Length: 409
Image 1 (cartoon, rainbow, N blue to C red):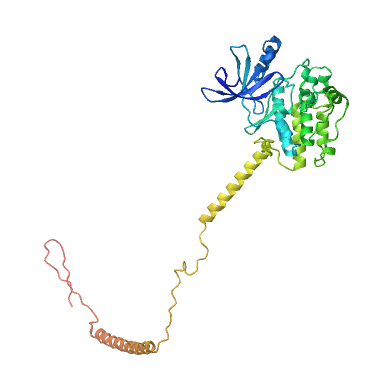
Image 2 (tube, rainbow, N blue to C red; image 1 turned 180 degrees about the vertical axis):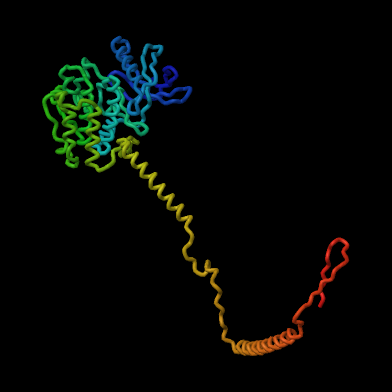
C-alpha cells in the first residue's frame, strides 16, 4: 500500500493495525493535508456484512464533531473494491504507549479520564455507543485527548477473542453484561473507563486470568483489589469512585458519563485544593498539551469583576494624585515674604554709613528751618491782602437787553 493513491491521498506509511482494519498515514497531494486512512482488511473486504458494518461505522462517526473525538473526513471506495475511511491525523501516540511505562500520576490520570468522558458524553447524547473503549483507542494530539477506534470492535466469532497473554485486548475492558450476552449500553462504555482509570493509578488491571475466559469470569465474579492498597499515595475517596464505575449491576453503576465525570471533578477539587479547570498540560514523555478541567464560569466572572474594580480604583487614585498641588516647597513658593538683608561686618562700610547718617541729619534740620521761614512769609502776605472786595454794577447800554457785570477792586 505504501506509495499507492487512494483518491487524492498518497499513502506514505503504516501507522497501526486492528482486528478489522489497517491504518496508514497519507497526504492530500493537492493541498498537502496530512490524514489517517483506515482500510478494511483484505480478508474482510469481500464479506458483505463486514463491508456494511465498516461503512455504517464511517457514517456514524462522520456526524461527530468534538475536540475529544477523532473526526472522519471522507469515505472512499477505490478501483479494487476496497473501502477506506479518511480520518483526522493524530500524531501524539496512544494511552497504551504511555501506560506501558507504568502507572501515571493522579493529575494526569484525572485529566485523561475527564476528556475521555467528555467524548463519551457527546457520543452518548448522539445515541452512539463506542463498544471498544481501551487505551489503544485513546490518542493524544495538539493538546487534546482523542477517542478513536482504529480497530473497530471485534465480533464475538473472531477467534482472536480467546488469545492469551494480550494485556490490552478488548476482553480486559469488557463489561459483565456484554459477557453475559446482553446488548452493550452507554454504561458498558463507563465500565471500560473505570478499568482504564484503575490501571493508570495502580499500574495493573483490576481483573486477571491466564486465558480470556478466566479474565471474563473475573469480571463477572470477583471484586478488584482496593486501588489504595496498591498505591498508598492515592487520596481517600478514589476507591469509592472506581468501585461505582466497576459495579457489576447496572443500577449500581454511574448512569451517564456526565455523572462519572462530575464525581471525579468534585472529588479531585477537594483533595487537591486546586481550582477546577479543563486545561492543564499533562506531564510525561509524550508530547502532550491536554486540557484538564475548564475553569468554572462563576470563578472566571468573579475574577474579571474583581480585576475591573481594582483597575478602576487605581485609575481614580492616579487621577487625584495628578491634580493635587504640592503642599510645601521650601524657599520656592514663598515669594510674598521680603528678603532678609545680610549684614557684612566691614569697618569702612560702617564709617561711610555713619557719615551718611550725619549728612542726612544736617539736611533734615535745614529742611525744618526752611519750613519755618515759609510759614513766616505766608503770614505777612496774608496781612497785606484787602479784607473786602467791592463790586460795582455797571450798566451797559442796552443793545440786546443784556447786562454786563464788571468787578471793581
